[in-house]
Each structure stands twice: as structure tokens, then as C-alpha cells.
Image 1 (cartoon, rainbow, N blue to C red):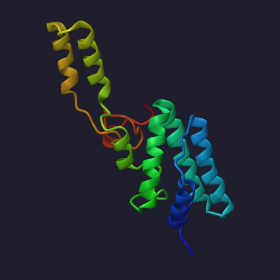
Image 2 (cartoon, helix red, strand yellow):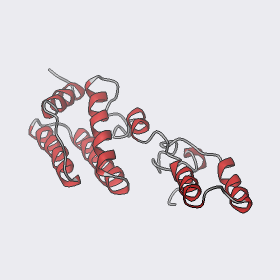
Image 3 (tube, rainbow, N blue to C red):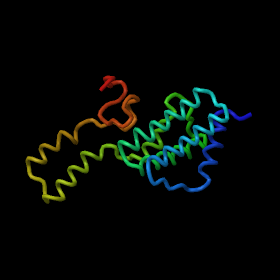
Image 4 (cartoon, rainbow, N blue to C red):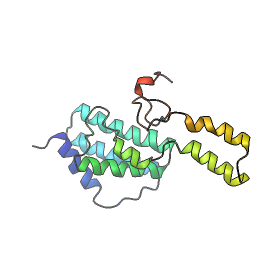
Length: 167
């Protein structure tokens, strides 16, 4: 008899047989809902069904709504491959988050400060002395990799030990 991880790997491989091009976040959500429905029909435990639900929430509501459809699809694809290869366990605590997949999707999570500087420089040519002085503290600020805080997975300003919950 298969355990939950083997069943999930089989489910993932059956849903990923063909390359699917999701046109909308709703289509991706529907595909994950199909996983949930198949797992439910297979009488998976409530804890395993909850893991799929948490994964759906993370991909659709966190990545998809805060970033782009392309990011959500890429994470979903990399995550599914990691589960199939037994490199990641969806049923582990906080199993919806695979750091390797996340970092592959968002390799430079601190791009906001970099892209702002680049766009300012591109419009005005060389930076003036005031702009350079103002940018220096931002560059020296400590940046943590995305996922360092389990409460704020996309935050790069702190890690879990520094987190003030509720903010």
C-alpha cells in the first residue's frame, strides 16, 4: 500500500503528464483543487487534505496575488518536481513551502532597492551626490533571504528570531 507521499507523487505525475499553460490564476487554482478532489476521493486523512489546502493558499493567495501568475506557475512546477523526486515532503510541517523552489523563482528578493536605483539612474543619467548619499544606508541595511521568517515568507527585512508577530 502506498503512503501519502507516494500517492501524492503519483497524483502529481498524472496531472503533470502534459505541459499545461495556465492562462489565469483561477485556472491554476482549479488544477490544485483537482488534486484536492482526487485526494479526497482516495480518502486521505484530514491532515493531508489540509496540507494540500495550505499549499493552494500559499501558491494562489500569497505568490499569485502578491507577485505574478508566472511566478506562481513556476513555483508550482518546481514544487511538483521536488515532490515527485522525493526532495520535498508536502506533508511535513509547513510543507507548502519549499525553499529551493522559492529561491529559484525569486532569486533576488531584494530587487526593489536595486531596480529603483537603476531606474532613477537610467532616467537622469549619473546620480547626483545627494542621491548617492541617500542610497548608501539602503545598501548597508541587512538583507535576509526570503523565507527566513516563517511568519512572513516573502520578507527580507528580518528572520524568525527577530519577528514581531502580527506585523
